[in-house]
Image (cartoon, rainbow, N blue to C red; front, side, top):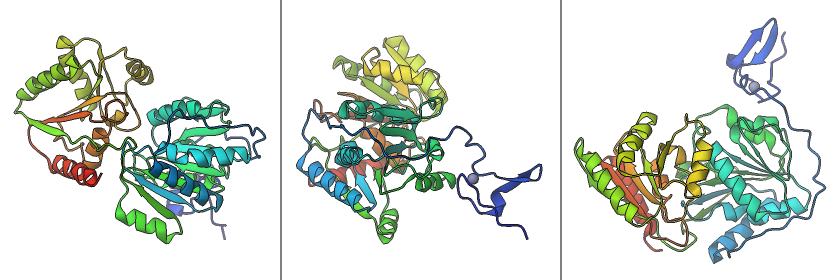
Length: 382
Ligand SMILES: [Zn+2]
């Protein structure tokens, strides 16, 4: 009898997903993940790493960061549920520096490419003596470094490689519904994994504890300010554009940068074309737009004053004094979690902790209502 086929790359054993080409079996689940593998695991000989932070962690961040480090040393997985703007990335810095100076391999996996680039920039500042390598679709020639920051899709290149693996935005597309990515994740880890999320649910937390991990919650933003509660402006049909115009005019007076979130790719361009008649120095981005990374980078350096965007920018992009408009906020693609993430874009930096978020829509969806209630609830007791 035929020996049962086990995919060498992803570990799939289910014959439903095994195909045959020219008499040879192959795995249909991971057939699209073809490419160079990282060199086999060796200890890292470069050990003069240091942490460079020009601000202090809050007492709560400090306490949690030490706890995570402790878990890492004891090989216990940690799940961190932290509200947007709580400064989750900083929570893993002590673990990273410890691992690096012990000659261990550190990986930082994130579902989205934009966030990979953002985190890469932040870690380059925080760990100036370390070699930081970003790996994602279109950027995968160099696979080695002291810290590898990669999209979850690139994890297949690293087999039993990371002594410390951090996995950010575990709730984000496309990981949530994938069979294959969790398998790559587990196979690339050698030691403890730290999971980070802003919107993890109670069932997942209970499950995580059952499997021996520790769940840590952090609901305070690091600058000690509450999340901005969005205000709603309702308008019928074309009146929505009228409201958009007036809110933009108001935001523009302050000279602060503005994100205008829209539900679809088509609307990103259309909304920009409308705004561009009245407001210069803007642009638009979405997942299909070429040079997206450059446009975002230019925005960060104040070459643009506003960006129309789909929820591609919902996570990870941090800009000082940002103001946020969600246009057609009642669209079904704007679910509660997305709206909360978007609201969290504003008021993230210490210079402008209040922020401003406006939902413009024809109706008030239950997602909008729930998002606002959720933000209010988390703000209570701060
Ligand atoms: Zn496979």
